[in-house]
Length: 473
Ligand SMILES: Cc1cc2nc3c(=O)[nH]c(=O)nc-3n(C[C@H](O)[C@H](O)[C@H](O)COP(=O)(O)OP(=O)(O)OC[C@H]3O[C@@H](n4cnc5c(N)ncnc54)[C@H](O)[C@@H]3O)c2cc1C
Image (cartoon, rainbow, N blue to C red):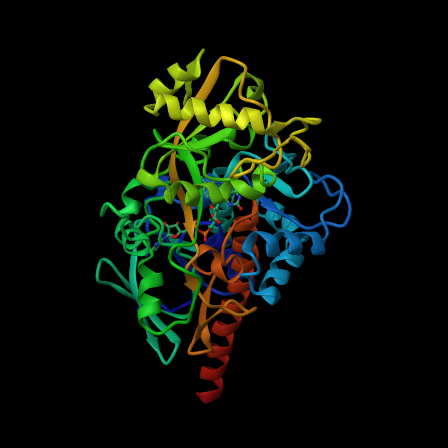
């Protein structure tokens, strides 16, 4: 008979791998179950580029300082206070020391890429991106003796009074373990759940039918749903998600980072009626890019168009798809399928309202509009220099925030009480820290810190179960 494994890790992305590595380092036997085949392993983590780290002085690839208080204020601002301060501060503090451990498991870092705005101070970039990070962790896990099974989707877990007993596989098999870490991501790839959460517009159309998924197709939220149905405490709201406005031509899944269009703050965003609907210059792009998916989702047809002129070129990372290009606004409107007169009026009103001071995209500059609704509060330059460019954008869901309530040990809660041996990490619990909004790189920081906490907690829970058995024998 195969001996019972100490720690079962469900999921195969960053949080799962961090948990598996730490549990194994603590001496536990570890089995990791990944729904995806080997070539698609790594969930959304394979698409990432960086993580956000606090530091009090320049550190290897990070410039200047990014102190705990500043990180905390950034998080508080983007979440509008919808965050658990104790858990958030734990994430922030541990973010200062995780890179040494990551390096020991083969992750390399590089300074921020030019063209990625404002991130050299706060974010450490992975050399080779998230794919290289995930591959390094799998290599390290393999050499430490973590067992990995691909193409093994888990369909549910068996619990006894909030205690993990076994995982049920889609294949019908059952795997018992002394402790379990759930790191199976959000439910962003589950179209039916997105439809249910987002509902219909006034014409009866399902909003979520027009959403694209930026990452893996394997995050179906099966275990999140199962756990909530079995009485696990929830955090967050099913419509809150990290959602980016991405190129409408992106594939349905796994378009990744290159489908993002980063020129929004340099121009205007208009809906299908050719009208503006939000302040494009509200704050730095890394603090705002993740709200635009939701804003576009709330527009008719879930579509919008980013319009720039020649002055914006070279000031943002070029997207993978070429935009429409025209010498006149009328021609641009025709190419984008926008009402010509409406677009011309929107641009004319905006140009007339621009109060141009000293343009500087690196600071919250003084170029703004006056008497225009909605205002553009920074980087407001007239759209007057052909050729004009336009990109049609749709909501691209990165990950959902509805999750499992956990405590500082990453224990999943049932009716307010922590489970003795069931822990959660990554997107499946990120809503504890991120109730809404986003600040670049914090997803990987939460997954890394809570993955490590969950791995250590699960190894300790498994060890204490073994001790209890010995004492009882
Ligand atoms: C395009 C893109 C770019 C991003 N860039 C960044 C970035 O630069 N920095 C940053 O901080 N964040 C970024 N993010 C967000 C980041 O990917 C997540 O915050 C992070 O990867 C979450 O890690 P995770 O391990 O919780 O989830 P994932 O990496 O998504 O892993 C979930 C895993 O669970 C598996 N799984 C799901 N259901 C089951 C099941 N039933 N049984 C078994 N296995 C299952 C999946 O196959 C997958 O392996 C990005 C996301 C995307 C999509």
